[in-house]
Length: 165
Ligand code: SF4
Image (cartoon, rainbow, N blue to C red; front, top):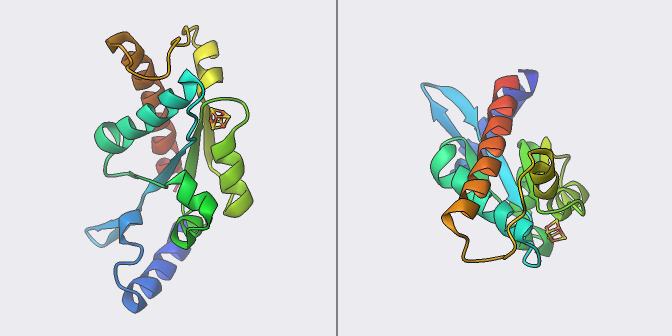
């Protein structure tokens, strides 16, 4: 809670001095600040789990938690995008990584701030007894359902973070 109060003050100061700069990252409902959670997906192209990371992240942003989440472009983040790096320093983030190399989590923590959670898709599939798709694109309906399960897990983590405040 203390974190939210401090954040409210900082955002208020920033908002009146630099209008709209942080608007995509929070909303104000009835005078109450509602912080969004940043979802940072790895950009893995080499393995199906990287594809699942990206699809699941989009599902959360567009369908499951559109009002509570925002994404950060990992390549821009790595290239030095100031806004992206500031975001992860000041707002809660979840990294979604295809495999145990955890590129999204490591990049976020190296260049910005500590993540509040990480989902490693390869571990998730193993722990849930789900067979990994054998291709990286043109997912079937069945394979999209796997991405949906990962998206639901991300959604749960978002809820936990927002509940903690
Ligand atoms: S976490 Fe794994 S799948 Fe994702 S970009 Fe890194 S190596 Fe590729």
